[in-house]
Image (spheres, one colour):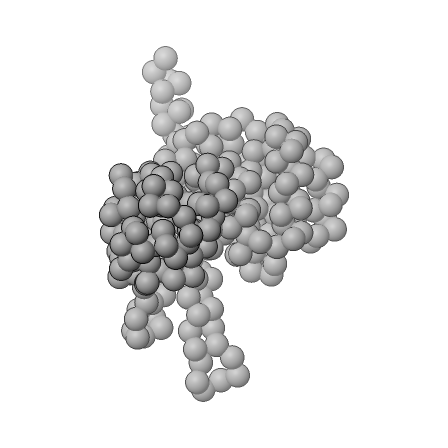
Length: 258
């Protein structure tokens, strides 16, 4: 599991000192990967024990294991390869990080929901939201109410109940409109799933389950602007759908046996 995923998963355990350590690591990943625990503690104005506890809150055995993961992720960083090689690596990372991931706890809630909502906070995100509705409605007859504007979100938040499920697509997970919407659902006890970039973000902390996407920007030296690959969003949606289909088929088989 990526460090950003562990951060989002354990964020509620963090103290002010933990957040200070996290902020330093996120801003100085290469430097932090080479530091001793004493050096990092000094940079963050905390004790050695505080750094060790921070690592353990992320489910690492100690600081050394945290450094190993940092170095591994730095080793996976994109180098001066061709754009297509980098995009292919994004696809590979999405498949590898989701292939063995278990969403059964969320699927159990999802399968029993009365209504399904999906909120896309921008142009690409709205397209992803409509793709979610397409694959689930065409195959499993689970229809989503697609929310693709801030005004619609304000109306929908009054209708959504704790018996429903809402998926929220946001690249940064930090949009004020998205966070306001998510906080209101959180207070109502509405189960939510976030789809965001692979980074620590506020939306992921509010959601019951998280999906992560990597994007890659390709510089364009012969045209007016560059190109940012977003196909990974649709690949992620298909993987999530196929995992739910597998879950539904397993439950159906078990029901027939009983």
